[in-house]
Length: 512
View 1: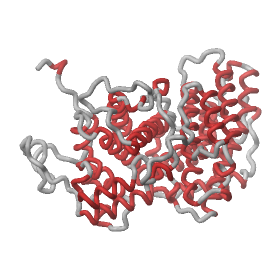
View 2 (view 1 turned 90 degrees about the horizontal axis):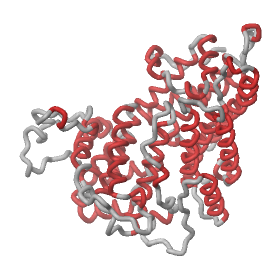
View 3 (view 1 turned 30 degrees about the vertical axis):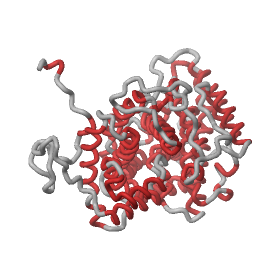
View 4 (view 1 turned 60 degrees about the horizontal axis):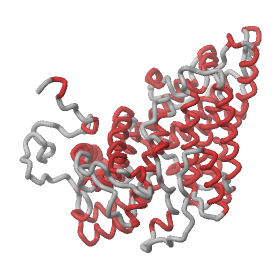
């Protein structure tokens, strides 16, 4: 075979933990099993699987609301572990095992992860169980993110999203939607639960894509301009055993953001909007903000474009119900979603207001930078207050979702900058004289430090990564912090390659 046509290795097999020669704990592997063999995929007994399913829905479902629990559990109870595609089961137990109290079960996570990734690598190229394959892919993307393995996370998302788009899930609510290429799956024959699961799968791909791209300005994989899809129905409707009333209000996506905001507002007036709807809307805005902030060939009207997005931001904040931001008015189960929404909206606000200082542009740029920066600081402090309220309400660290970790670190960076280097100094003469640091901001940073130190128990390597990042940035010299501050929002999360210098095992210490 010519070298140019050699089969490229799929990213889904990278560091999977499954050896490609010999055996893995006595299991057949691709090198020593026949094509017709049925290898033992390491699925535990039914009682253990049901226990892990309960753990998943208790601790992780709020991060990944893509599966109907009643249908899943019913099939397990009536058909056993063979009633669910093995890839999906492996993915569920991989995620759930990290939150299980049994040490032996937690110890099996790496093995199950390897088996699940290898199974996904094979399933993605077939037409068998396409919806369950994509649900499993999202769980494994979530798991890879929690492991802090960004390379696999990025590549797995891109490859599996392509399957969803080829099948036509991204236009599942189009009038004439059909699958053009049939050999990877089809949109035909879906019942109402599967149709809703398709919508949720697409929106979770969208959320992951926007959440993974904004920190370093990567190009988006999910093209929102091609989406023809409704927003998810409410969780109560979705988890019900009865098909929802077809006359109920339906929220349809619109690519025009003003039109979309208006639709969400009208839906909210009918008491039909959910927190997940507002979270999706926030991610739509985050994607637009990211595209403007990371434009490499900045045009003259870039500031005007950012200011226009500020207007969209304000409009979205004005249509949010009080229970979407005030925890005293929220149900206990809504706390994770409120913190999640607050974190994404805070990131949008900070990215729009933390402008780069271009000294060569003279007074006009410095005036704009000086005027916008206090809004970024206030936003970061408000995010800390939301965390205080969440802990005050007795919520556990389960609201520290993988989705919010980077966003909370954005607020951390802003407060470190304002704490160590308050305001802006346009000349050396304007540098403030050494004095006492702001105790209120130090208190905010201590809250963020405490939250960060708790993160590894629920977020694993991802939580540990941002602890190291916190220590790295809080230990930087004033000169380096000031330079980083003047670089603007694009630099808030870009230096993570240097963070290893602060990996010393010490706790986070905020200087006095």
